[in-house]
Image (cartoon, rainbow, N blue to C red; front, side):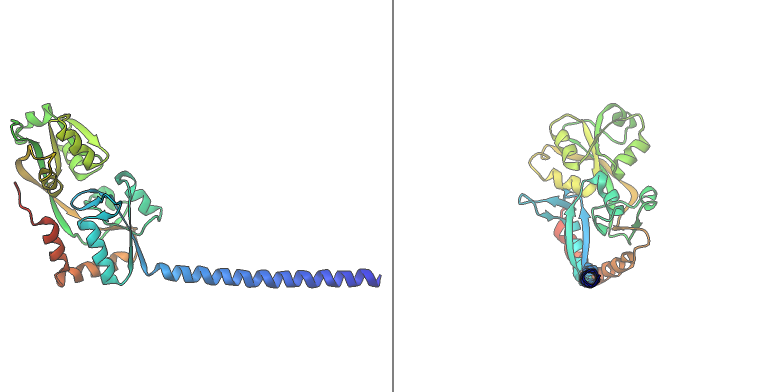
Length: 267
């Protein structure tokens, strides 16, 4: 009887020690989680497309560059946080934000009512117009609706360019591409007759070897399009980014970046 009682006491003591040990381990884990959460306040995770020069592109070494990338870094510096910038395919860029993969999108994203139902937008940081491109010796005239309806016209899928073209010319032969680069590739290869694009990426491509035989056709199309940074609805980041954006505009940082990427004029 005494032997059984002694054995029971030993077992109970061992269980108590294990319980204390687990309690200490859990306390340590909780502290680590809190520290990690605190550290996250020092990082701004940003997504860009990495395929929309000169706003954002992927360099030969895999690094990201462009106006959007420099803008994001300038905003992070103003907010005194570290930028973690990743590339994300365009079609998945808003779903990725909503899923918490990153905190903000800086990717030449146009503010539209449809997108505003899913994300919150900061103050605009760029005003955009659309243009048509075609071969220099082409008779394509975008002021003539018949020319738009009878030619194969490229545009990037799920962008303001393709949405405008589909809305204004529902009968047009529109070829949609996952990236702007692929759309330019087919234009340069003659697989489409013309293309509609944001103005500055179009000018960037015209200055390349593959775009040297092409020109802008017709007038710029002003659709009151503004680019802004997207965050999750209700996120306090919207106000913080707006303040940082206002500061870099006031101190000349924004103008310097604008001159760096957009000093070239229309051709």
